[in-house]
Structures are given as structure tokens and as C-alpha cells.
Image 1: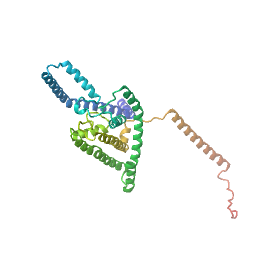
Image 2: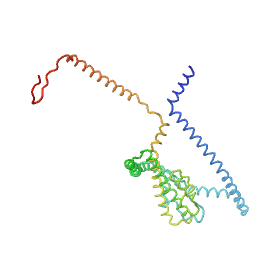
Image 3: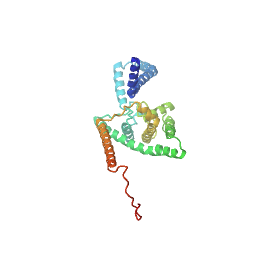
Image 4: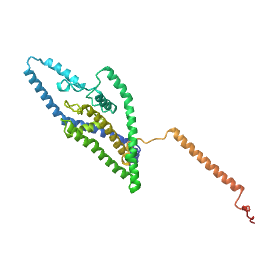
Length: 337
């Protein structure tokens, strides 16, 4: 008996806090996913890092042997200065001296990466004034960009998702959830083709040192706003039409980001995903004011019902059923006797 009571209470506790248990499971799954990613990245990349370190050591030792007049300390100072300049987007190589990082097209590309929160990090402000302006510009520009993207995506969704699904639902009579899922899948395939596969082929042709995988990797890292900065187009030493190329990349990133948001919003509106999200949410509880309003409405309804019942009882007392009803009078007609 006690076991049944305890078992029943446990079931009620689990049922009452079901969303909390789902949320705890979600947090644990996310932590496990982070650890899994760290283990895989460490296992895959650590050997390549060690190999690169060894190659740099060998090159440095060979350089010092060939130039005995140069000390190790002076070489370290030169390399530290060169790496610091490279982190700010300035290269010491002769064939890179003709490329400027802060001409208009490069600055426009930088502004777009800042406002979209992509932030490749290959070019950063050098002056204190530039850093201060970047802070102010981002504080105003990032919310402005979110407002702009929200408005654009909402209008595009109306013509590319909601109206087509509603039209096909009325014409074909298909289930709206199924039709919306098929439409979302088709939209995702079109977006991947137009903003990932085709641009990756173009970048692999225009960028001499990029293969298809590296180009596709750049497209994904950019449009997902991760922006690692290890691959940035238009930074080659012999890049032709660099200004026009940078301008085209800027428009590509903006349009691609809008397309990604449209696809994500389309999937978020699916009934299947809405049901999945709800299992992790807290149930909305009525506030005390709302409960008081409900009780007041219930009391008001009850009082009205009581008044109506008492009115019917008084009417029955005044006009009992055994009293003969009064004669009926019809308009423009005789009196019934």
C-alpha cells in the first residue's frame, strides 16, 4: 500500500514538473555536445598543430644557420613585430604592399561584417578614435540591423512561405502541417544551392588557393555569422578588380544572411517544431490579479443566474399555472372568446 502511494506520488511529481525535467535533459545534452565537439576538434587538429610547430622550428633553425650574424633575440623581435602587424591586417611582404585595408570598399565590407556580427577579425581599427567609433557604431547599428532584417524577413515570408502554403492548401486540400514541412524542405534545398553550392564553385575559381571544400566552408562560416576569419575573399596578392569583388561579396553576405533567416523562420513556424519547443518551456501560470478577475467574473455570473432564478420564482408566484390565461388580441382581428 505504501509503495503504491509512494509510486503514485512520484508519478504526480514527475508529471507536474515534466517541462523542468525536459529542460534539465536539454542542458545536459548541450553540455555533452560541447564536450564531444571539444574532444573531436582536439583529436583532429592537435597533430596538425604539432606538425606545423615542428616545421616552423626547422625553418627558424635553418635560417639562423644560414645567417650566423643574426642573433636569435633579434629574429624573435622582428617576428613578433611582423605578427603584430599581421594581426592588424598589415603584411610585411612586398607583394602585399599594394593592398589597402581601409579604402572605401574594404571599409564597407568591414562595416557589414560588424553590423551582421560576423566579424572576421582580419581587419580591425588601428587608432583609438576608430576603436571608440566602432563601439558607438555597433551599439546603434546592431539593433538597427536586427530591425531591418526582421522587417525584410517578415515581408519575404509573406510572399515565399505563408501565401504559397495557404494557396496550395486551398487548391490541393493537403494537410497544412505536411504542406508546410515540404515547402520548408524545398526552400532549404533552394537556399543551399543558391547561397552555398554555387557561390562555393565561384569562390574556388576566383580564389587561387581555395578548393571547393574551403570555399563551401567560407560560405557556411560567413552566413552562419560565425566568422572565424581564417578564409577571407579578396585578400590575395594578385586579386583582379579587388574593389568590385569586395563590393559583390558585401551584397552576397547581406542577401545570404536574409535567405538564411527566411529559412530558419520558416522551420520555426512548423507545427512539429513548435510542439518540440513547448516541452522545454515553463507553463504559464495565472497571476493573482488574473485569478481575482476570473473569480469576480464567476461570482458575477453566479449572481446573475441567481437573480434570474428568483425572478422566475416570483413570476410563478404572481401568475400560477392554474389561472386561466387572458384572451389573446390580434392586430386587425377579432377578439377570441
